[in-house]
Image (cartoon, rainbow, N blue to C red; front, top):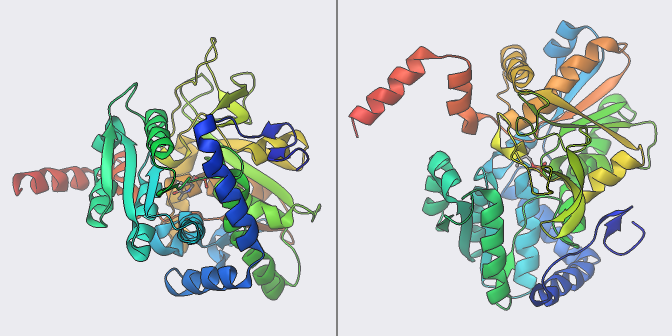
Length: 408
Ligand SMILES: *Cc1c(COP(=O)(O)O)cnc(C)c1O
């Protein structure tokens, strides 16, 4: 990082003056906490007792044999509390919020996964919790809304604008601006205004740090390739960051290829020029999918977690410096990859994570058996049962849903 809060030319803080004191407070609180052994002791204690860190690094013997090339390992972030890496971030930020003596956590969520993680940590720490969600998303993510409410959070459907994630972001920002003394805005990925991209990355870096130790134990060396899916970019940067100085380790981010290259049919931000251009949205300067007049463009992905027009600034920097490379996987490849992992290893991956699995399946057969790939399995697939069942054309599932409705 050169200029404060920037990764190369990307990042910074573009927010209303009202929010500046809140961001300064987060930055100074984190700067102190970062050097405080007690802070990290509590982080690691809860990570290991309330979640299940260190998560295993698992060798996919069957899948590797079947593909006939490099060895594939999975970092099992799917085994975290609430079923994804998101827990690492909400835990760290909840500890910061408590240090700042905040009483309320607010967050915005699209798919609802970050909302569930935030509601969980709010219940654990006794924070009041408000989740902003586009009305369209509230309607289509009912299971997550149900759990957020059971966990004690208030879910506010946002009907303004397009009633989607970006409108929920705007509403959450408005809430925060009016309540900065009592409220911490718990941002869910490694993006947004400085210092969020750095803080979220640091909490998620536990992933890569563990992989380093586990790989040394397992193979007595570093891996050759690290692969992770990239939505906002938090699970990928968490895996990559501890390896950035290990120049021989290749870093590959996988974006949502959706259905095709046409604007509106994918969420490829870094790997697609010129649809993704530099711009300032959501409080930072980054690469965003934009239409011809510079508005945020619609996106599509089979999974909600990668379906976003923007990406964290550190990924744009890693791409521009050539340290990491970015590619994409189409929806159809993603479903095939998920099926292959289920059938060969007995592991049900989240659709997001299946993007990374798809790239490993493409890459492994091209490499010799001596090479090692680590895939970040960012989350588990239970949440995706509706999409999987529909995509795999399961007729009995449809019957089951119809029966359920009749018994209501
Ligand atoms: C939210 C989510 C993602 C995408 O978020 P990043 O910040 O890019 O990591 C990926 N995988 C799973 C399972 C998720 O829930």
